[in-house]
Length: 272
Ligand code: MN
Image: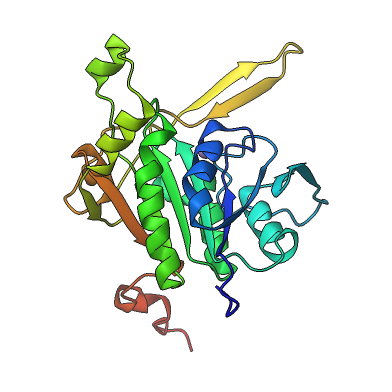
């Protein structure tokens, strides 16, 4: 925040597109915390990770006051908004609320997390939110408010990935019980939270080949999730145990210990 004590500037984005319900929920959640600018892809861009558009032009369409739709990736949105569409650098970048978890190695593919990582690269504390498939984005609202307040207060350059556990049980879902947003948020606010590390999440390897109407092959890649171990302290474990998984991420993915790699630079025997 600048010395002028203006309200903090919060940039809101996602990877599901400007029309996604989770984006509107996220905006409502942060509105009371500062001035909000929304800049999101014009279409679904899930799985775009850290992709940036460098070889074609971008257009930003103003859909309403302080809301922009960009024909690019989540990273394009954060870059363009931070440097050009906002009147100053954002004090916080918030991404989501993604319908579906971003756990473990999902983080490498996630556009939701990619957008937040770009926020950090542009200098702002940044945070990504995801809820389980089939659960309303509203369950994240108490955590959005709590965590965003905290990040704004400290103004440290951090990158946080947040995943909510199921708040509506499968039985309740089956019975289609009417649960008000207030009731859900009350439940969600009472959830325990854990600081976690990235867990493991694997998907069945699958390539589906089909034929188009002209007889040429086309493909769908990627299979459903597989059972993977939920180790205590990892994000996958926390959400499976009904806790909010709060995973601080760092952008340095180099191996923490270089010693096992020393053979790569060792002189080759008999070479010279
Ligand atoms: Mn998404």
